[in-house]
Image 1: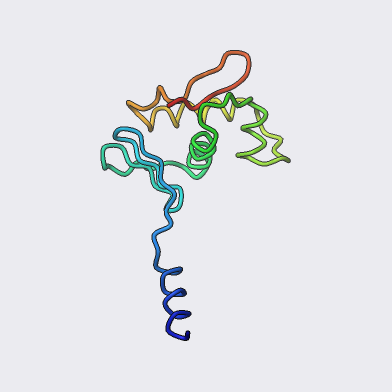
Image 2 (image 1 turned 180 degrees about the vertical axis):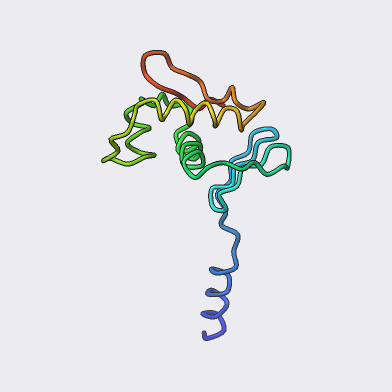
Length: 114
């Protein structure tokens, strides 16, 4: 029983529990906070990571601007509304050929489409 308990602990600590999203050449590793395009690491700012991860976690759902700001920047964010637009623009630029996955939903906000 002692050996079984030790083996369970070893499996729990050494197991690879990475949450990964893949689409064609785009790989997003939530656990390691890495984004790869064609196996090349893409550097994003912390907020761009948070924004992309929130999009992917809620893929194919239209997300309002207010919802995105509240969930990514926090409930008590009092900054400019255009901050979201700027981060979306930079995120699309970083995603290069996968930038079309982030779709503008006119009058509402944005959606991550597969």
